[in-house]
Amino acid sequence: MRSSDLPEIRQLALFRDMSDESFADLVRGGYVQTFPPQVELIREGDASDFLHVIIDGVVELIAGWNERQTVMAMVRPISTFILAATIKDAPYLMSARTVEKSRIVMLPSEDVRAVFDRDHAFARAVVTELAVCYRSVVKNSKGLKLRTSVERLANYLLRQGLHEEDRRRFALIVEKRRLASYLGMTPENLSRAIKTLEPYGVTIDGADVFVRDLSNLERFAKPTPLIDDPSC
Image (tube, rainbow, N blue to C red; front, side):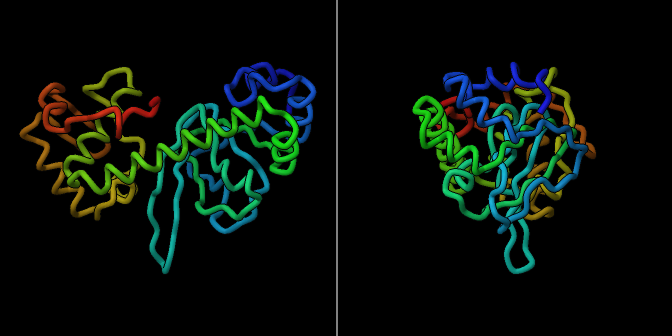
C-alpha cells in the first residue's frame, strides 16, 4: 500500500479512532487497487482472505444455488464487504463483482482479526459496521415481503436518484436482468412493472430513466426511512 493512500484510509470511520500502532499493523499487508467493471472480487464459498472496503464505485453481492443466481445487495462507498466472514474466519456466503470502475482497499483478514482482538476502538467500529450491515439486511427483507414488485421498483428508482446529479434523469447502474434479480422478480415482471409506473410519470428507455413527476412517484412509492434510509 502506498504511503499516499494512508491518510485517506485513516479517516474512514472504521479506522479513525484506532491507535496508530494498530493502524500500522492493519495496513502493513494491505492493498489499494482500482478494478474495471465486471471483475469478480470474491467467490461464494471461498475462504475469507481479505476484508474489502469500497472507496469509489459500486459492487454487487451475488449468491447462487442449484444453477440459479440472484443479486443480494448493491454496495456503495464507503462501506465494507463481507465483514462478518472476516471476523468469524468463515467462508464467504456471497460473491462480489464490480458494477463500475471501483477503488477497493484490501486488508488481510488475519491482520483484521488480530487488531480486532486487542484494539477496543477498532472493535467498537467493527461492531457498528456489522450493525449497519444487519439493519440493511432487515430493511431489504422488509421491502421484499411488504411491497409489491411495482412498489419495490418505484422505491429503488427514488433511492438511486438520490445518488445522481439529476433525480429526474439518470441511467440504471445495472442491466435490467440483474436489477430484476435484485428486486426479487423475473425480467418479465420487471417489464410489466416499468409499464405500470408510466402513469406515475416514469419512463425507462433502455438504461435511461426519465421521471417527469417526482412528487407523483413519491406518493405512489411511499418511501419510509425504516426501509429506504441507509443512514438510520
